[in-house]
Length: 338
Image 1 (tube, rainbow, N blue to C red):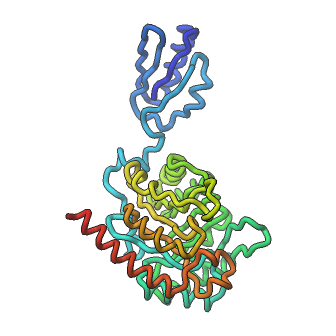
Image 2: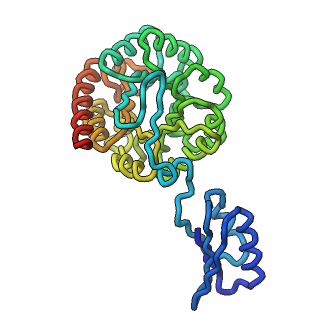
């Protein structure tokens, strides 16, 4: 971090500023030039709030020369993180596929979908027990009953389950959930993130609708700073000016995040596009870009789905797409190894 001093700052103000900065266990180096003075900070500056520095007397500007996230930073953790759940892995070179309905609706619907995605080669079962919806009148999920049905589906199929938490008060209900998903709307619910950081449970963290990659990584840092390093990042599309798709899938996020972090990266082509016909090509694009996983919505009867039917694949469509996805996965892995 570099702190630029105002020309009119007094020596007393500069001395007080340097003494205050040293309280963060960093070294301060004052450099005096012809037209300006700067203070260079050496050490771990992640705990220093740039806005707090700007508020000090005599400060003109603050510039970071290092990312403000430490636990999620590849610079401090060069090896890829691999998260293991019930014998299945996310990260480390293989592609994990998470599939299932947007919402858990009925026992029959979930069990038939779970069996179908397992037979097609999915590694995890997803399903929404709690549903954040734009309209307060839309189906909000079955709640605890939905989680109980997911646990039942896991017993029948052996697939680990992934479902979304919306509120901190529901955390106890997720005790037997394998991966807790944090949706885009909660990406910056820092109280919830810190609580999940105190749990020894993998967290699938979705990028906010208008969040930058650094903001996504800072949200991951909230979880990791509390001791939970089992974080999976999910790119699910961001809001842009383009109205033809539900969101705009940022494929470039995969290689960019790969440079910045060691955490696994999953792509959700269903929420990103909002169109079932776009799910397969975007899935293949994600595999080509090097994603560690996919999260795909599958429903036995999309036309009558209680939520997001337009972006859901039928079991037959999912099985067809999985053949192409797995074939491309082998090609990409072989290409990287050759």
